[in-house]
Length: 173
Image (tube, rainbow, N blue to C red; front, top):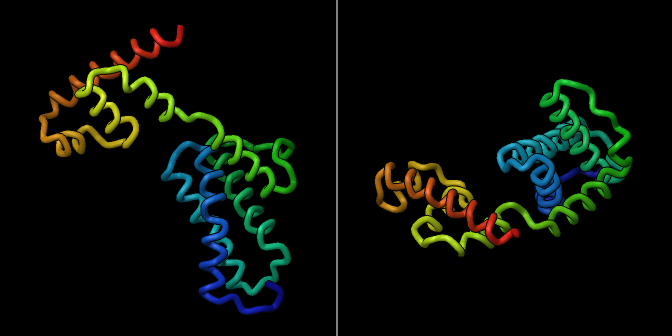
């Protein structure tokens, strides 16, 4: 990247190479798709600004993950309104992010746990709970999708959550 003009294709390649890892890192840390998307976009926008300023980038991967690190720390500072110590984040943020994403992918997430026990509740409740908790649809969207009224969806969701809670309690003993 030294003194070379970066083309649109280069940018697309860089985006394709690093988007997934940066997004997953933010998502696993924050557990919000919207915020992870915003922070990932902010990372690439900051990188594009550096390119516009025609600054040299020696090590693209380290530089990009350095931007991601700073954006993540800025997000945490804003969220918690305090300084975040650097001591718990290693100097090579790419390696830290890679390791964190790999460990997070190995862990069973909440949705996987719910799916295990979902099979143990009645079909109608199962459908509503899956749409609500797994697909993250609103109650109104579920009403439209199922062609049912709001009372049906709310009641079925309430019963489904109770059944799911009972199924988990029974099978965790």
